[in-house]
Amino acid sequence: MKGMKERLAKKIKLITIVSTLKQGLAHHKSKIDRTIHHIRDEIVAESGQRRGCVTPTLEDVYVSEQEQGHDLEEDKEEREILSEFEENCPPGGEDSVVFYATGLRGVRKTFEACRRVRFLLENHMVKYKERDVSVDSEFRDEMWRLLGRKVTSPRLFIRGRYIGGADEVVALNENGKLKKLLVGIPRAHSPCERCWNERFLICSSCNGSSRLMADDEETSSNGNMWTRCRECNNEKGIVRCPLCT
Image (cartoon, rainbow, N blue to C red):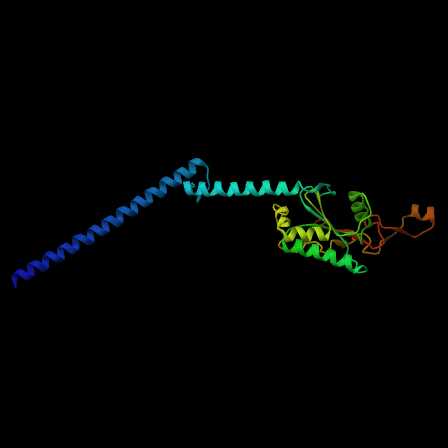
């Protein structure tokens, strides 16, 4: 009986020692962790980095280099594809997509062709400047001047290069080249915040009437009480959206 008590006492003492050791190791680990964090904070403060920035590992650097190499290959391929097309830049189209179209349904074939190109651009979710030649004759004249002849819409330009009409754009989409041509173009996640993709706004000067009350000088010169609005300068009383045209 006495021997059993002695063995039991030794076990209890051993358990106490082990428990004390565990607590000591946990306390020591906690001190080491605090020291590491303190040293890291000092290094971050000295280097001027923001708190939470982590020095990249070799694996991170390798992955980053791979991504950069992939991006360079894509840029090179995009430039090669872009060079296949005629350099012909519409106003404001150096680094963007310009799309000449018509909103009139009078000629169904032309209207449907414009809708096909518009659908492809929206499907690729890129920002583009749509210029409706049926609403603004200046856009029509601009398109004719660029192509050197009287042509019908749609006509697509990407980064100052003439891509073509509906048939060419559809063919490029089918062989995957259109997607590569649109690499780097800003993404469009919602309609234009000013015109909601209508491309035009009601003139704020004449409220869409396209006429203004003439001043005394103009009235005395021609006898008319009304004069054409100088802001919209067209019979429709609308102005181009400054964000998406």
